[in-house]
Length: 319
Ligand code: FUB
Image 1 (tube, rainbow, N blue to C red):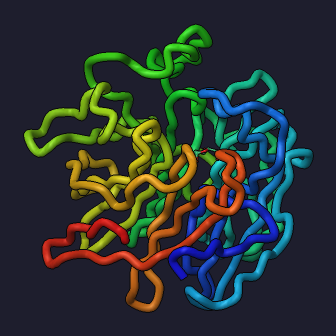
Image 2 (image 1 turned 90 degrees about the horizontal axis):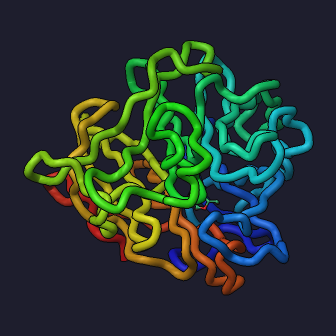
Image 3 (image 1 turned 180 degrees about the vertical axis):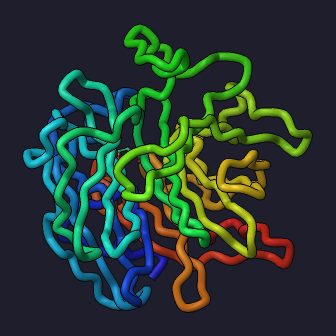
């Protein structure tokens, strides 16, 4: 199971897995072939629709439910449908997704469906005040919903340090010293279509309570946020980007602060690494991607493997 892609008839990446209606549903990016050369801007990730996958359990056949949403149906989008996530609330399913708007700025959109496999009907505008990439939704046990997001370099988070989009900051990619750029979180409104709080910075600290620094490339946040809860604690996990690790930090509230704990997955084949963590029938699974099927950074395949916690709640490095 661990080494086989979930599907091989299409390329899939950035898997967000959830258990809905007793099955595992995976919301991936749908990678496609392109002649665009690899660059640090991520232009080669030129996706234009989403498929939803489902499976009765890990190791069982995977159903591709076909196109659930496409770029041409989303009024505010110009290109690049990147890593999505989904949530269930109020009897509806919500697909959150990043894409470039007509000015080339990454924003986050939401689309609504009646069933977990879609189709999803997009809102006419992106979520007011949203920016950057890689939305990860989290509905807590008290019913409050949150959206985590952000990604540096091609994900444009470095352009938002003043609160307004600074096109000049694009090429700087990230600060060279001082604290690392922080991922973002906001609470979602009851109807899941807007932010009901200000956008806050998610603090990721070392064991001494200091913010991780921007030159700490093996631990600092790059992209691919994910939130899950284990035994009452909040686990914030993410990719370190240019050092290619999946790592995690633990906090006592959905807002953090989160204290860095360690690695979940060592680098895989391909430049990007992106994941989700989900419990199914008392086992925990890591969903991730690599490029083993294509040998190309922008043509990735989603995989799954079981992960384990130790007695103190630490996630063991996946093997
Ligand atoms: O799929 C496009 C981008 O690659 C995602 O937004 C990142 O997380 C990385 O996986």
